[in-house]
Image (tube, rainbow, N blue to C red; front, side, top):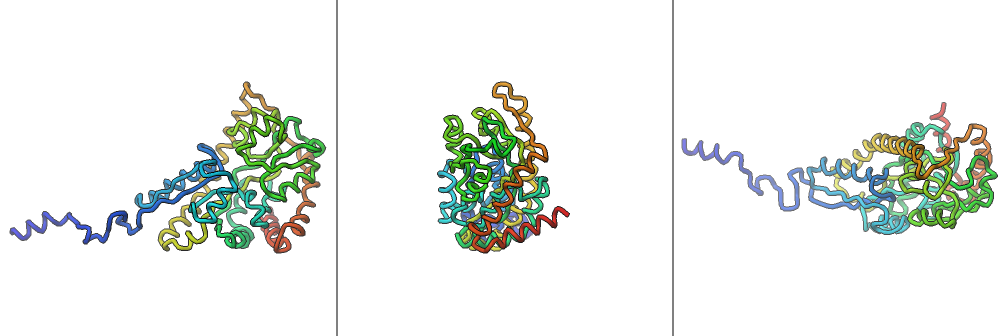
Length: 347
């Protein structure tokens, strides 16, 4: 009886030797670690809340063993600095725009082509989810530079702001249009006879205020939350493009993950696609309403008709030949495959 009582009393106690766990290791077998996740946006904006939600899900799936630390824009330098940090392995994960890698991964400039994706943001997201041209062919181009894109997603349709009120191509004549570090972005606006200027977004508000640049493009949520509407009189709802972001990782770090952790990361990235689509839609809708009701900083909202958009599209389409002949390192093969995928999605 004494033996039975002793066994019963000690049955719920496990030693470190029994469980096989050690300090710094969870019962799941995943060692404690911290992953740094940099974004190009600030707290509350789509990329940053994406990183926060990603961190929450990773923590839950690893029983708290893995801590993901989101960094807002500027915390670790400029957009270009952040790309270099990911390449070097100084950070493990990043949300980045292909525009800031345009001089490194030439094919990534494909997202600067105007009127390439469908008008429907939802259809565009479906293409980003399933495209072989992007998720296989383009990914390989990035991996040659130690960056692995795990997903592509839209932050919403792009709109133009200015003080001139853009409703026809002639309104761009000589306009100092801010663009990212992408030769193709510059070519896209040169097609409208604008004068594109590369500028980091950290300098954009001041640049617009002082007239260093006179116009810019971004999704609605970003235009309002970054207060560009305070220094721009008009916003043109052009839907000429989508702001595409990539969830990326350092290639070597990702390759060295255990199969269990890699599966956790992959599954989380995949399930976040629907989450971030709903988040960007919510933010773009809510900030449009706020802009419309902002009497302190009133903004004239110009909605282009289909005929007006067609005038811009006519000038934009020839830039695709420039991409094939002057930018692409594979003779436009990725663009051609993507165009086939877009056409199939539109049928």
